[in-house]
Image (cartoon, rainbow over all chains, first blue to last red; front, top):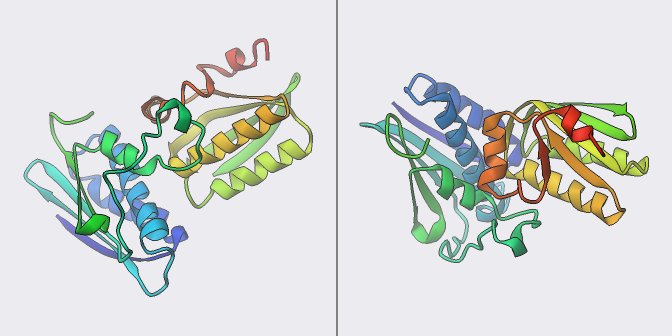
Length: 137
Length: 110
């Protein structure tokens, strides 16, 4: 299975695209719990790419690629922004950050996915979820 | 997402149904604006119909929590499915919010 989608930098386009990807993944063997995690992480990655990456630019698209290789679902989200320092993301669960109304997206992705890598100065995020046993529930 | 409000005793219960996501979080904020405008101080959110929440939904709830706290009010949550509760637990927001298993418990001593 291989999915490739290009998304305009508009927030309202995100939920329908996420839903379409999840529907395609429903036959992949991922449990309902894992599908929920994948949906949330894809959603958060796309919001970050549209909002913080492309800064809503109508000239730039966000690319989403998903494929199943062996026992892993691999999703990559790419924006055309300026990148960011992914090593300096504040922990939103710290007491001083708990009431902040932003900054949970990357944290959720790192917590819920089994492997997360950033490339191209933060413009690309690669998220891996193990389909069968093992990995995070 | 569908939003329905009901008054029970001294509290307003907000029944949510469907997904809380980046597209409809503004609708939820608007519903909360209406509740604040009516000077309601005890607000409970019943999550029994909610099957999804993202970080924009969490942010909207945090804003409501802060607005109510500012006017001496309180926000309580109840009837969350485990997968929704997990999102609050992962982000440690279960430490910030009062989350009850049932609506009855949420309204007790409110």
